[in-house]
Structure formats: structure tokens, C-alpha cells
Length: 198
Image (cartoon, rainbow, N blue to C red; front, side, top):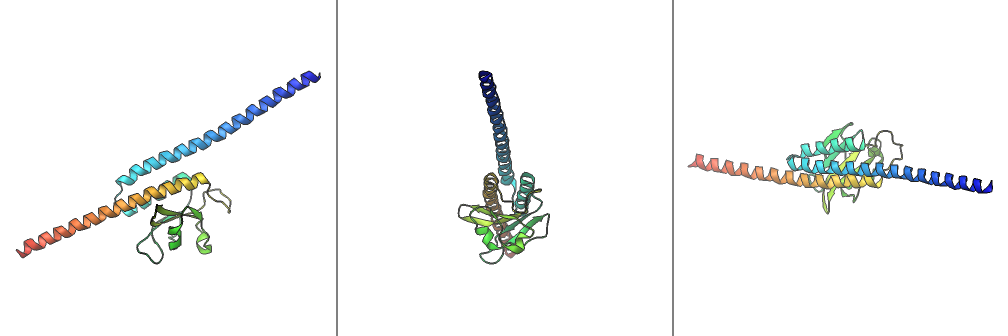
């Protein structure tokens, strides 16, 4: 009887260990699938950003991507225009346009918003940074169904930081294209002026 009880206990322990391993594998597979989806999204965004040539289109793509990927109800994109003052909010979805402090563009990584007035509607900020280059910040509401003390996990922070770096490159490209078009327009005006003068 004692031997039978030991055998049953060992079999039960092995079954429980296998079940725990299977559950851990399911959790790991879900995390892996979420990361793969995030990477596919970043690849698609890189291709989309490569085709966008104006700030509003890029900001719109950022907002759609974050709202879809993270299930957040509110997104605002604010960009730098000069070295002083608040950032200029170029796009808002889901709420009124916030006044975004310049300090949020200087953050090193995504962070929970500490400013009480801003934090009533907006939960966290993502600096639009690539290396030392800062172009602004994105502020987001908390994802649907999260508790009031919600904070983004590492995978979420890594995803939005990668998206921000892609967006900075897209904004820089759009600015260069706009500058080039402006130079070409000025050259054409000078050429026409010379023709008229001649």
C-alpha cells in the first residue's frame, strides 16, 4: 500500500509538473506572439514612414499605430518648433489638444506623466527621440481596462521607443523634402523674375 501510494504521488507530481510546464509554455508563446506582432507593426511603420512626406501624415500614422497596438483611447503628438516654450500639438485623437511641456521631449525613455493637470487626461509620455535628436513627444491615455496606477511594461516601452525612433527619422526626412521643395520654388521664382526683368 505504501509503495502504491508513493507511485501515485510520483505520477501525480509528474502530471502537475507537466501541466505547469505546459502553462508556462502557453504564456511564453503568447509573449512571443505579441513581440512578433510588435515587430511586424514596426516593419510596416518603417515602410509607411518612408512614403510619408509631411508632418501631419506621420503624426496620424503614429496615432493610429499606438491606438491599435496598445488599445489606448487618447493620443496626442506634439512637435518642437523652437528651443523654448511648450511643444506644438499637431494631432490629437480622443480628447482635446493638451499643452505638452517641453520637459516631456527631453525624457530618455517613455514615462508616466507626473504633471497633475496633464495627468488628469493623459497617462504617459513617449519622447520622440533618436539618439540626441529630440523632435517632440507623444502623450497617451491609459489602455482600456487598466487600473488607475497602470504603468507600461518593458515590452510596451521598448515598442513605443522603437516607434518613436522611426518617427524621428520620418520627421527629419519630411523636413528635408520640404526644405528642398522650398529651395526649388525660390529658384523658380528667381528664374521667372529674371525672365520678366529681361
